[in-house]
Image (cartoon, rainbow, N blue to C red; front, side):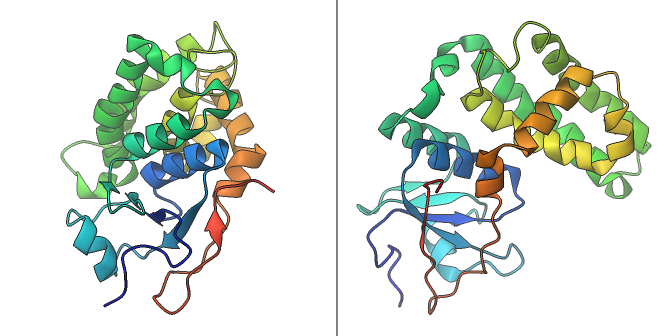
Length: 222
């Protein structure tokens, strides 16, 4: 059986390129400059190695060289930033209101986002209804961006990185609506994120991982 750890002895990150949870883990890892071995998976064909360490079968999953498993995206972000907090990403995380905002993102907003994106699976209400539910959170983000260029800070931080992949997913459902929505500051914030070298780096396409072909380490913007 193949070893769960990488042959190069870096931590192993199981990831899926388009998953917003995996995106934010990769953002923190890349920002911190921590090297990991990235194993891109197919959600419809999850590797046995990943399922053996995290039976819940969701990404991201981080396997440390000592065998420790971290399979919550926020915990992976904190792990990376506690090693090297490049650009003071953790400063805003100390604010309880910032933590509450991320909790709302992962809770009510994510639920409304899923129903909005896959409205045909939730015929109980029209698509516009689910969008309106999500707008409660969008309005809060817009309000916060009236005071600073980023959420809770004058620079991009853990809070922005934790939330931006989900707003990106929401915006992509109906880009024409989002770009003309009553959230112009949020649109600017998202566009700046999408144009950043950090985002472009973490969205590089990796081949699907196989035991026979271990990719090169991920984590340093070069």
